[in-house]
Length: 297
Ligand code: C5P
Image (cartoon, rainbow, N blue to C red; front, side, top):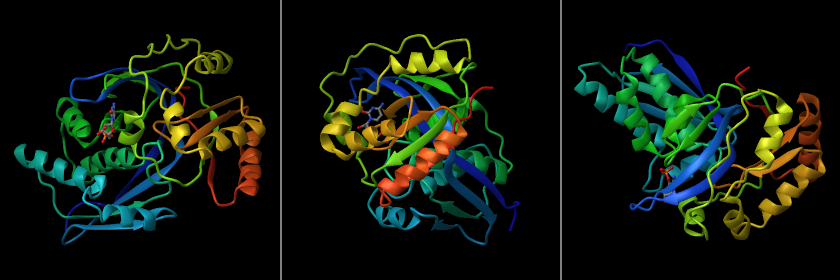
């Protein structure tokens, strides 16, 4: 057995704004999105083993194991296999590894989930295996795993364009205090894209360079998530959830990705924490997490 046990965080991906700006000939949609990553997330653990192994834990682990039994399999295992195959072509070793996924985020919920896990698997296994691959090799591997995997691999505040693979790191985004909410009903991303009425909306405006929270909230409030309309039509709980976040004092409320997770932006850590407690009292059967994004300062 080789390698030293290590762990890697898979932070939730929050689309603070998401505009659909067009559609490619192959059906994928062109996006323009402002993205930040939260303290809340899944956790991947890697340890030496005689043969490959995979285990699930955490609040949503049981749900994922049922879904992974489907034909799609698990994105963590796809990431492991793809990285190992690439390392083989570079003459680098990739010995057996036991992977444990602590699934803390709701499944199929618009905050990365599978993409964040795949990206964390690439980062963690690179370190576990002591691998050296440059960004030109890793980028296509990430994209092959899913349109959101390259941005999750980056893990910093960014603007993503193309189908998500054209990434510009944002250097002035402040830290946001959020509550994430989810009615615990999964949404299929292709389903939501199919229901989009307008596929050529205006791109996002220029993000502020000031780093001021006020400027950023005003900027974000003037943008949208174009997937929110179709998601609300499919799942009315999203509208109720957004109203609940607003009723607890959120300054900005929006859905992330293709849903159903919505976030509220609060004044500070304390107001976010008390909003989360209140929301849990209102709907103990839903998911609520108070968290912070990793701003650039
Ligand atoms: O690439 P990923 O597996 O995350 O995407 C899931 C599905 O969502 C795609 O097969 C496609 O139907 C839709 N999608 C899209 N445009 C994007 C990203 C995803 O139409 N930019």
